[in-house]
Length: 88
Image 1 (spheres, helix red, strand yellow):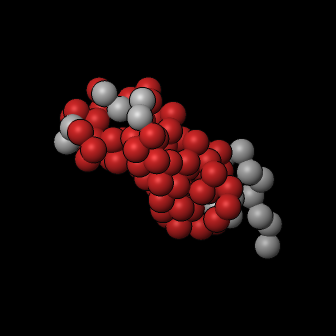
Image 2 (spheres, rainbow, N blue to C red; image 1 turned 135 degrees about the vertical axis):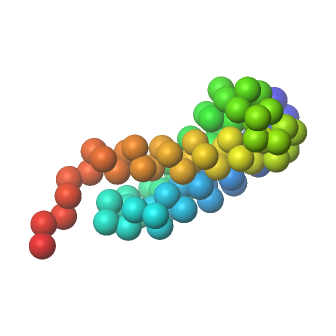
């Protein structure tokens, strides 16, 4: 694992997390938490799925960005289901 791949995964995941928050505004966890969860998901997804899913998306850097963004988008959305709904 090199530093450049890790940075790509962090940034792609953070962007994906914020996109996930924008897609589901009613259950968004806020920009900061969406960014952190997205970055964590991006790194985890890039490390675990980067080779397999990344090759299907486009391989190389494009696959790394795509995989990290997808998992970064999914993690805040999944976490938002544990947030109580707002009443009013």
